[in-house]
Each structure stands twice: as structure tokens, then as C-alpha cells.
Image 1 (tube, one colour):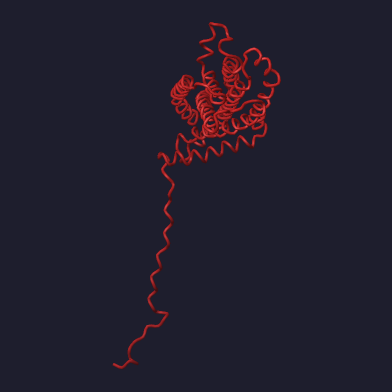
Image 2 (image 1 turned 135 degrees about the vertical axis):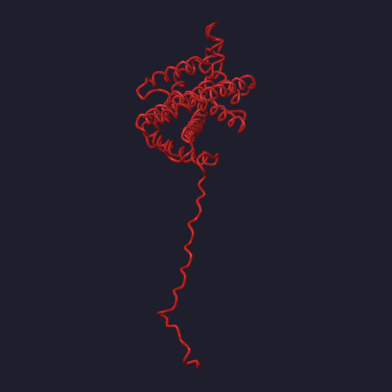
Amino acid sequence: MTAADTPTTSPATAAPASPAPAASAPATTAPRESTVRAWATQSVVLAWRQVSVMVRDKATFLQLVLVPILTLLMFKVVLGDAIGSATGQDSTYGTVPLVILVSAMFGSVAAGIRLNQERGTGLLSRLYVLPINRAADLTSRLMSEMVRIVVVTALLIAVGTTIGFDITGGVIAVAGIFGVALMYGVAYATLVLALAVSARPSAPLVPLLSLVSSVLMFFNSGFSPVDAYPGWLQPIVENQPMTPTIEVMRSLAAGGPIAENMVKVTIWTVVIIGVCLYPALHGYRKAATAR
């Protein structure tokens, strides 16, 4: 058989080439919702949402930032000389820490009210059915409170330095003031969140929290020394959460012992968070799954 007799295969009848394998889709790297990594990353994302909501609400934002500054200046103008002459101490070393803590409390009240309203609108239920860590939303609210406390504390310290609040301990003392403010603020915010998720949307949450904040605000050592209160009231004033916190901040700024009061602040922080953490988590789950 010659080469001419050899059968040839035409292009039309050639066997089709096998298709190239399709490119595989990139593997997802999203962590499972129950992992610590998911809890951390999702908490940061939701915290940014909380901060954005707070900043976009102009009235609330100005109230949380501007009112503490005006309150501090008012205390200095109206009560500064009277407190100084009565106690023999510069009033700014008491009123600046006092206003820092009061701003932390009332800011947490606003955050708790927003959480209670979101429960009523069904937002918590929508968040709960998403594939996110169950604790991320509550953690994000505490993180946003920490951001707010840091910002407001920095502003109040800056304003305080113009009216006599001189921090003699340097950078370490400043860091200590921020740390103590965060300890108190996070503990109080945990208490508020536990109440907010447990209360009905129509419950009188504002009067209750405002009453607690006002009682703490007026019975502490920020306005006057503990010795100036009636004898039967002095143990209560001396050991309520605000007084040792104010005294630690005062000592960090002006110099003085902090060990005893720091122990009290630490105990109060651990006790409040320890007592309120489970009710906050349980109440959040109950509020998010309620029909």
C-alpha cells in the first residue's frame, strides 16, 4: 500500500479535543462562626457599625461630646472657687475625673436605650439569624463604648489642662487615667446592656438608669471629700464605685498613693462584669429569639 492509499483524517472528522479543566473557585477563608477568630473579626466590623450609627446621629453625638465639656466648664465657673475654699483643694482634680465618669455613664445609657429600641424593631432578630458569632454584637457594643470613652476622656483632659488640671506623672499617669476610666466605663456599660436586653421595649429604662447614674454622681468624692458627708453616709460614699475611681485618677494626676483605691476599682470592675455578663448574654439571646 502506497502513501497515497493511506487514509487520512479530515479536520472535520477529527476527534474533539478534551476541554481544559475549569479553574477551581478560590477556597473561602471565612472562619466558622463559633471560632475565636470569627468572634474577633466580626466584633470589629459590628463595632464600626455602632460607631457610625452614633456619629451619624448628630443630636446624640453632640450630646455625648459637647455636654461633658460644657459641664466641666460650668463646674469650674460656678462651683470651682466655692469647693476650693471649702476643701482647700483645687476643684479641678475632683471635677475632671467626675465628669469623665459621668460622661461614660450617660453615654452607656444612650447605648442601652438604642439597644432596647433595636430589640423592638426586630434588628436583633435579624442579626441573630446571620452566620455570625453569637457574642459578636454585644462585644461590638462594648468596643464602641470604649472608643467613645477614650475620645471623650481625651477631650476632657485637654480642656481640663486649660483650667488647672495639671498631670504631674507624665505619660504613665495619663495612660493610667485612661485605663481606669475604661475599667469603670466597661463595667457600667455591661450593667446597662444587661438591663437593656432584659427590659421590655416599653419599660421605663431611662428613668431607672438616670436615677442610678444621678445617685452615683452626687454621692462621691468628686465634689467634696468623704469627710464632708454625714457620718452615717461616709462608708457608702467611700466605697461606692465612683469614689475610688476618682481618687485613683486624682492621685495619678496630682501625685499620691493609689494602691488601696486601685484594689477597690479592680474589685468593683470584676464583680460588676462577672455578675452582669451572663444576664447580658442570656437576655440578648432571649430578646433576639422572641417572637
